[in-house]
Image (cartoon, rainbow, N blue to C red; front, side, top):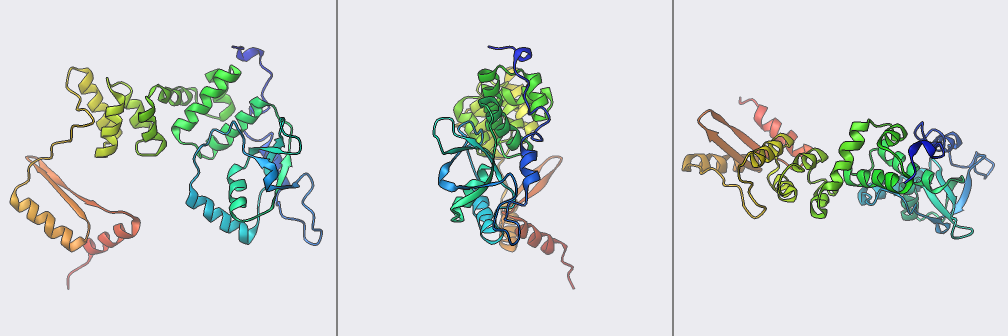
Length: 304
């Protein structure tokens, strides 16, 4: 593996400014009024001639958000050109360097062509721009981010210090993110899908069975601190419940259950009352902010 010091200096050390900045400088992407031509440096390229970046670290796209962007494109057009490079394996075709989300939305909007800036970049720059664009815009889930960092290190010999400088993150962030790749595939899926956070996942790594801990955290809605306590107990010799074990709910007396039922009828929401020797807590589950607002109005309504 090549050492970092012997590599060709990356033109992306200052983030996206060297390449993405060129695209931003070319906006607006719409033709100048009365000219029918795209701004200087921007080309209209057929949608069918453009391919996604094979090194794109982002694997999932929010379909609802894409539909919203497509609708915006139908009414306002593409406000910023995408960045592409000539496809080295297919003459006349192009690979996306940055802007895949806009390209996908443009296809949904029914556009036949899209404004693009063409630049010649090598494989390292292609991968690096894809990572930086998504990391800076918080478009990657933690597992995608970790896999992207690992690709830069294994394929191009980058060090953690070099990665931190390129993507504008601390070395500690790079290290902690890469640790997520120690998780088994089934556990990674929970992080990919947003069912648990990267913090939950890192805490679970210290357990004898990280997958069981992560599944437990997702099912029970455990906080990161609760996962840390669970793992610490297991390391100290305590037993860790397996994924098949269900948490034993504290038995409730008839009066508590009746009160829960009454509150659920009044609020139309799930209610959970937990009471102990030192007091307790009342949990009201809501689906969205509208339901929360309704609950607040009910609880603060003054009786006349």
